[in-house]
Every structure is written in structure tokens, then in C-alpha cells.
Image 1 (tube, rainbow, N blue to C red):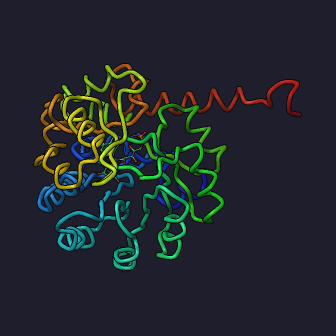
Image 2: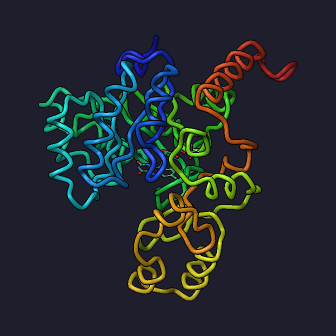
Length: 317
Ligand SMILES: Cc1cc2nc3c(=O)[nH]c(=O)nc-3n(C[C@H](O)[C@H](O)[C@H](O)COP(=O)(O)O)c2cc1C
């Protein structure tokens, strides 16, 4: 047991990050049933769709689970009402300030974690009264911090900045990486990319296959003027990169993105002109596997790494 497993009532301190177009009830339930914490990704769901997924979660698992809510969500008040009225126990908020909604969620008896990309934001989480903080580094898929702080640099600094239970995210794709996060001061991990490419992820087969084919350097952080996002290098990315290289403004970037680009790319499988969000660790993923196997491998690797840890011989003793 540690503070993260205790806070959420889970067996292993492994959180499946909420992910637009990937983390519906199938993925979240599979992770929770395997002893982690599954999160529904509300960011790509209409309020009614979320309600439907909440209902399905309740029949698919009797283990703890939660919802990720990006706070820039257009109908945020309606969404919060659904969440607070439906007996949800855990919410991970992201992309915004936790100040406004944390008290409301607490009033409904909900445990709140918030995702940050810097120590400054982590301190704000503490002020806002959240129960745990997720520190997400530059390697991560999805929206990202502007400052490009890597997980390796971020976690020890957030550890110093706050006493809150700390979950590390960004580039964690193995039991060894989990152990590294622990060594840096984290008490749990949030994993996105690995689960986005699992059998239970609702992303299209074409998206998953494209991500499996990536090499290191196959994704890049861009769109800093809008919302910094790590994207697969496809023809949409090339248009963005070209526009950004000549200093294009937000209007032009918005026009290039068009409407529903992430739905087109991730969910519908338009791998050339759609928006493909995935993390750097995708290049280490070789096959699409069920969550139960992914979880087993993470735990096996962690235990093996633990057994093999020793001080670098003859250098440190
Ligand atoms: C396809 C995709 C969509 C994502 N969507 C969201 C989201 O809606 N809200 C959020 O807070 N984080 C989102 N993320 C970030 C994940 O929750 C998680 O923090 C991140 O993927 C961890 O880093 P990793 O990809 O290296 O495992 C997304 C990530 C991916 C890969």
C-alpha cells in the first residue's frame, strides 16, 4: 500500500490516463478490473455520451474507477452536474485551473486529482485543495506543457514543491520506467500511450497501426500558440510545421486544424489529414495487446527490476 493505492482504493498505483477518443468504458473497465485505476475520457464525449459510459462502467466493474475532465470542456457546467449527480467517486481534472471545481467535487464526496506540467501549477493544486497531483512531462501524448520539461526533470522538482500524493506521467511504458518514476519521488504512474494502443482502446485500428510503425522522433510537440500537442508526423503535422516555421498566428493554425481533427484522426482512422495524438513511448510498442497482458507485463518488469537493483558496482557504495 502507498498513498496512491490508499487514496483510490486500488491494488496497483497505475492510472490509465483519460484520453480523447480512446478511453471509453471498455478500456477504463479493463484497467480497473486488472487492479489499476481506469478513467473515462470525458474530453471527447457529449454529456449524454458520458452519462451512457458511466452507466456501462457501473455494470462492467465493481472496482474503483474515475473520469478525466479537461476543464476547457465547452459545456463544463452541464458535465460537472452529471458527474456530481451520478455517484462517481474519482475525478482527474486537466487543462485549466483546479480552483473553481475542486470544492464542488469535494462536496459531492469525489476525490480529485489534477494534471500539471510544472511545479508552479503543482503548488496551485495544493492551494486549491486537490487530493493528488499528476505531473506530466514533455514525452507524453496529448496536450502538453509549453515549457517542454521532461518527466525526468519534472518529477523531482514537483516532489520538492508539494507534499501531495504524486503520480508521474509521460513516457512511462515499462515496469522499469515505473521504478524510475518511483526513484524520482512519484508514488504512482499515469499511463496513456500504452493503453491507447491496447485492444480495448476505442481508437481506430488504423490509428493504432500507424502508431505502432513509429520510430523515435515520429512525434513532435507543436501548436504551442493554440494548445501544445504532441502529434504524429503526417501531412496535417507537415502543414502545421510549415505554418509555424513562418510564424503563423492562431487564426491560421485554427483553420489548418479545421473541425474535429482528433476525432477524424484517432477515432475514424484518417491517418494522413487527421490529428494523431500519441506519446514518444509509442515507438517502443510492438503490438496491440489486451489490457490484462499489458498490466501483467508492467508488474513483472517492475518486480524484475526491483530484484536487480544495486548500486553501480565499484562507483557508489
Ligand atoms: C490519444 C491521447 C489522448 C489524450 N487525451 C487526454 C485528455 O483528454 N485529457 C487529459 O488530461 N490527458 C489526455 N492525454 C494524456 C494522458 O492522459 C496521459 O497523461 C499521457 O498520455 C501520459 O503520457 P504517455 O502518453 O507517455 O503515457 C491523452 C493522451 C493520448 C495519447
